[in-house]
Structure formats: structure tokens, C-alpha cells
Length: 457
Image (cartoon, rainbow, N blue to C red; front, side):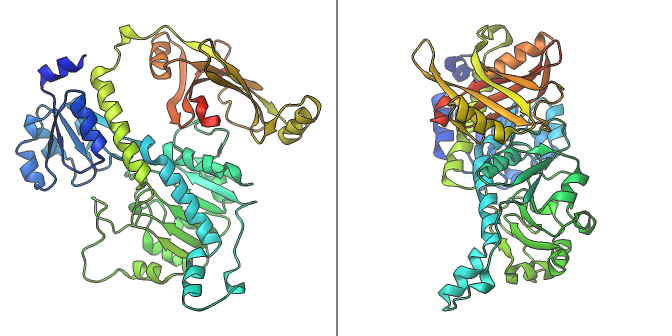
């Protein structure tokens, strides 16, 4: 569909929350008609929503059945954020309304914030800063802990969890992940059962959406199931933790410290806390606790993510209307070898051997070989030994996995699915490219990579 066709169709989009200006500008340039209304009530918006084909939101109010029934011409709802809990998703889908979100847009910001909270808790940075500024020089009282040697457990291994695990690669830590989906573990985190994660974890980080299954998930019983005392970080949703149970665990030293970017008491819009006159007792404890760090739901709220979230939404809306049809999918597929990965009983020692005897320039992840394609562009191929117990090759039981560089991965996966090829999991996007996984006829897992080589330079 051309931009001119969009103009003739008069696709009107209502923006009910403010966002980065590029979102408005790029949609307008593409031929969409933008309207904004940041102040009307939900009922006032409902009275005119039938005039629009699209709506762009953050979290000002809930998009419920009443709203959706009045949105008789709505084709999509785009939320400039990661979660869709403010939308009655099942009902929207039943009305053929496409739901668009942007978890790719702020995952890096959330990962950095999570890591910052851990390091601050471990080293008493907030407490020490306040004491020095108050004229106190307490060195022994502020003796800290090191992250190296600890086990970090991640609950929820999607965009946010994977990005956080990547940030931990520079530390000598064991990273475990638990997710309701199978085969989501990768080179950065080993997927385990919840029981194993609770047995080994020193630091717990939550990266799950707010759903009926996760609501009040972290309660007294959940906390007690952990074998060791641990630190907890929550950058997901506040209602995933029962605050009173968390506080009781902090008082008993079962939880050694808490970094909370989100709170149980937040309103749906995330813009305010509770409106009650009295502060809940559990929250009052957190306000005074030296081993608690509280931030106002800003983990994904950086200047960079503000722009990136908007860009992701623009790209997805444009893809909906201008994207290739299935019959237009390119036949250009594999463009080169992206990597060769194999299991090793002693991967670190093996890297040293290859560096010493064969002159490979190695790091913790193997060795990168650079070459140029026919157009003179710099391209890379990765050679990496993995630990023998890695689950990254699953469901394949083979000792190796190939990585192929490909063109237009998203459309290629659609084409492969139509051809009956087994697709494993969902496509994932990082700053160094897009990744997908398939099985060949013999059950070998193949990683497909649409690369961004400049990320490695």
C-alpha cells in the first residue's frame, strides 16, 4: 500500500497521551491523519473514538469493552510501552483490532536500571552518600558486597530479562532464568525450573508482565521457598509483589535488600501513587529502610528510550500498512556464515589453547572473524565454544549449532513457516541484529541472524 493510498483511505489516528514528537511527525509524513486529545475524560474520548482507525496510548486510562464497543472503525491500538495490561486484549483481538507494543524500545534502559540498583544496594551507595553529605565518615558500616561469584535469578525471560542478562556478561556471575515458555534460555542465561532457581539464587530480578498469574506472585510462601537470603529487584509491575510480605521478609533478613522501581500502590496510569490520606504501614517501612531503593517507575524512562519507543511504534504501524505481502517476500535468504558454536567440557581452557597455539584473538565469547561482502561492507563471523551443559542448542541434542547470516529475517521466518519448516520460539531483536531459530530435517538447531555488524566494532 502506498502513502498515496493511505491518504485516500483517510486513516485517522487519535493520540491520547503525549509522546516523542518523531512519532507524530513520521506518521504525518507517511500520510496518516493525526489528532490529539490529552485532556478529555474517558467518556468524552469514547464519544468520538468511532471516527478513528487507530489510537496511540501510554496508560492514561483502561481500554475496556465499553471503549472497544464504541470504537467501531478501530484497526489498531498502539501502546508506547512494553505491556498491554491496560487493554482488554482478548476482546480487542476478537474485534480484529491489532495490538501494537514496543518492548524493544526500553529494554536496554530497564536492564541498566536493574543493574544500577543491584550495585547501589551491594555497595550502600545511597546510604554512604547521605552520610558523607551529613558529615559522617563511616567506612566499616558501609562495607559492601561484590556481585562476582553470585547467582542471579531472572523471572521472565523476554525482551527485558534477556537485555538484563546481557548486561551481566561482564561479571563473573551465574545467571539463571525461569519462564513459562520453553527453550528461551540462551548464551547469557541458563533456563531452569522455578525450584532450581529458588535453590540457587542470591539476587532475584523480576521481568514479568502484570497478569492474573503474576498478580501478587511474590508473597510470603514464594519468598520462603528460596533456600538462601537474597536481594530482590523489581522493574516489572508493582502489583507482582505483596509489599507487606516483602517487608516482613526484610525484617527477618530473608530479603537482604530491595530495589523497587514499581510499587503495589501505583495507579494504572503509573503517574501517581495512592490517593489515601494515610501512608500504608509497609510503604512507610520502605521509606525509612536503608536497604531499600525506591524510584518512581523510571527504569524504562530514559531520554534514549523515549525516542526509541516512539520509533518502534512508528515502524510497526508503517509495517502494518506498507509492509510486504506474503507474495512479495524476497527470495534472498542466507548471505553468509554467521557463526559456528559447539559444546565443550572446558570452554575457557579451550579458548586459551586456541589463542596460544593458533593465534586466535579470543575473549569470553570466542573469536570474531572479520571479512567484506561483495559490496565492501564489513561483516563478522563468530566462533564460540559453549559449556557442555548449555541449553542454548535445545531442543537439538547435537554438540554443535550453526548460525547463518540472512536477509530480512522477519519475512524469511514467515516464508519458512509456510514451507513447513519448524520454527523455534519467537524472533528476538537486539542492537546487534535480529535472531530466529529453526530445525533442519535431522533435528539440528539452526540460528538465523539478520546482523548489524557495526555493533561489534
